[in-house]
Image 1 (spheres, rainbow, N blue to C red):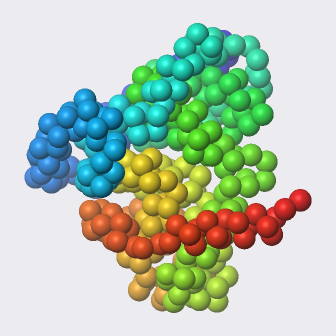
Image 2: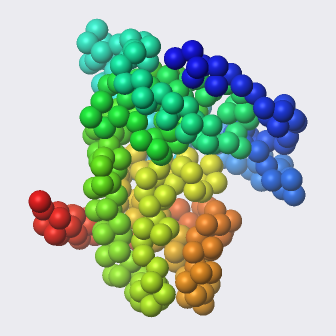
Image 3: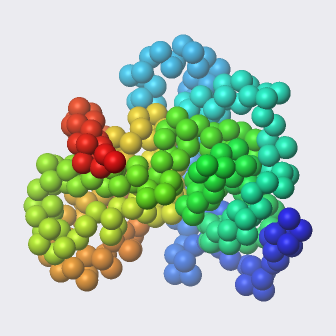
Length: 337
């Protein structure tokens, strides 16, 4: 344990330099400057929604029953001030945390000496998690993330820690205290079935890629045929999208908006936003051969255009729940052992 703590405390010379960061603490590229007018516009919109979200949070039982209104407000974006508590209420992690009081103590989990082999793996991954964020250039935020992931590796030793989990837990820690983030992480792994993404053989990821291939074939036929002709498989670009729900792929403000909706609507929205991303880039993608398509997807975060239009486009796609479930059943039948 001392070795891991020492590694997390190391600060490189690079981390001591001064950089320009955005409002979320992420390093801006040297050529990029903060658009103050755009930022003021975003902040004004967020401030206007604060009073409404305060009422929603204070009267959650009432608003949670009005799904149409709540969905509308979630799609409009949850203000930063209330995002943490809103995510906990949407997922029900606040209730799980209360239910587990006295039965499972977070403080006992992250100091446990069980499963020590996970610790070195966690440390290595933490150093690659949100590397462009100012708080991850020192040890404090890394230590918080380490403790949450260590606690999870003890809580569920069957699944344990796997690469990719750090981005999910790290995202939660932007808006929650450690213990809150831990129990929300547990809900994601258990109730949202995300642990199946990380089990041996990645069964849920394989199912989602199968479903996505069907979505593409039905709702973006031209792209589907072009990808088939160029031997572009869903796993070549969509695996990283689905494993972390875009947390390591897209610009952080857009990731937050996607997570707002994902936590409320589930995986169906991830298929919708994935389809929206491809639709925005369809004309260009149809003109590219295999090698250039692969490179294009590696830089997809710079090719999504207006985020609000993208989100509205995603919400407009009427992807059938029944079809998604049918394709899940079809995949299960094909992969029965």
